[in-house]
Image (cartoon, rainbow, N blue to C red; front, side, top):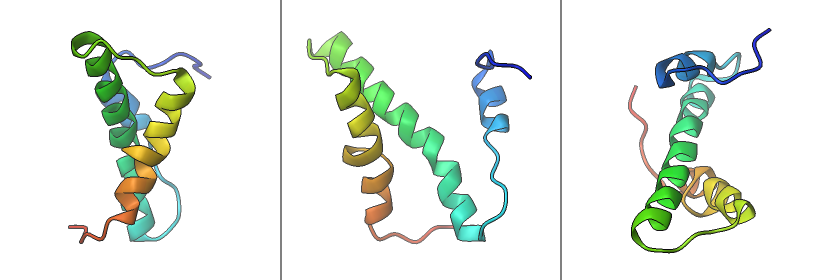
Length: 81
């Protein structure tokens, strides 16, 4: 078993598989990496260009709630196949 991060993003995404669940649940599961990366990207830009930074706890909070998964899921939208 390999306990290190994959070298390439595509390798990481190929590891992110969903087992079971409905078609809709699988679609939502595939959105999680994008939400995590978006939150990290926003934090990075804040640190590099706006001279602001958040604690790791705030980054995690943002990832899950503020600009991440829960916020995205709460907005009504139609998913395409």
